[in-house]
Image (cartoon, rainbow, N blue to C red; front, side, top):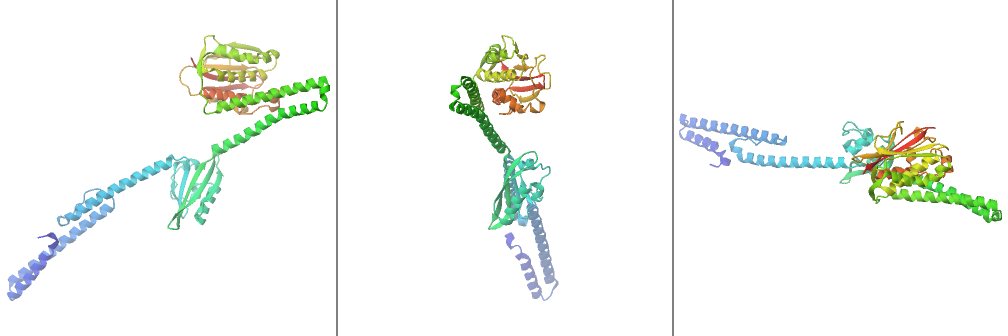
Length: 456
């Protein structure tokens, strides 16, 4: 008999027993059959209830995440098969959901922008790694109020506005340490109802720094151009007003015009060189160069000025020493270093140029060195040093002298004819080679600049 009709059996027995009892007019046999039928019916109902309880337990275990095979009584075997299938489907769905959550978390943590999601009550639902770094969060922020996480009045204002009015809001904020961010808070809506806000924090620190550098650069260039142009224009107007007939005045003004025209030429040349060095498309033309010959070529550019000041220039470089570099760029950097040494060394002073194995210099740069560029080249290196007995550089300015247009003594630098770009060019020359650059100085005693090159 089919199990689905098993419940009829006790009813048939009970009915048959009752009929037989009536037929036998109350004899013991009829009553016995009636008792037997009732007992069978009760046992069947108990077994059924027990099986249903077991099925209920298996369903609850499945809901709780059990991955074991359903164990149900034989009459409910088909239901157990269905529960097993449901369990497998549920396990697959949970695994898929966990995989998606892991991928979403990895994706959010790889985003450079900070992401903060809050519910309609302003409590944090999600925050990525970048946001934790921006605000220095140590513990997971989930469940906290957003002002406890995004600790900035501007950020709180943007998020509160998006929560209260359901409109997007953008604010810019500054964090301790100089970091600058922009936050864009956008409401999350579902079926026309607000569900919370997602706030995205963009790091603007580098962009703002570049903007300041651009503005400073334009201001400095304008100033550097205006000074010689004003002098040239003034002299030209004076000559045009009648001074041309005075030979002494004419000679003096023509000399001023020539000096300032030369200053303009040097400034424009340095600007073009710097622009070329900073260009991404610059390609090094590396070749094996004899360092002594390279230095001698650079010394010829400053020899006349050095001789006029009575400066002694000592070159200590082995004739066979060779470096692998872009000769044209290294000459440019060395000329700037030698020009600086000549300008800022008093009359009768001494300039020493040394090159050899890195770390083997004797008596040069024994004061504490300030690393400007760490260098990242591998293999054997040679070191080139330019040391003078000049006025020196204050410790606070050692790093800044490599900035464009930065001068320790602005008045004296301009009087010397400097453009303020020489050491910036040196820095870029060394940087494009991937080499190390350092400086050491003592006020009143002199300065030493040093950089490395790959040994050829």
